[in-house]
Length: 76
Image (tube, rainbow, N blue to C red):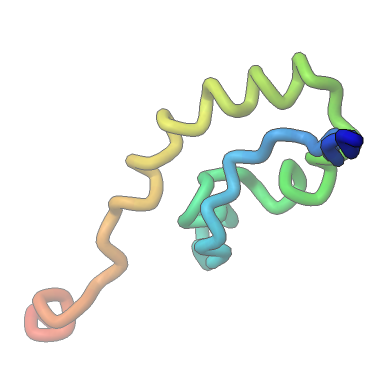
């Protein structure tokens, strides 16, 4: 007798389990979603999630800006 396969109906997420929020941009450095988007993700429509997912790669450059570091301290 074959048992039915258990399937879960989960919402796709761009989360890569590197959940660190950039202090000034307020964007997750792992998936590039905003705090608001992460909070509302499960309540969004599939269309809204797809639209946001499509825009995520374009947010990466916002997090590439250097915030100082050794060179900045030496210049002071």
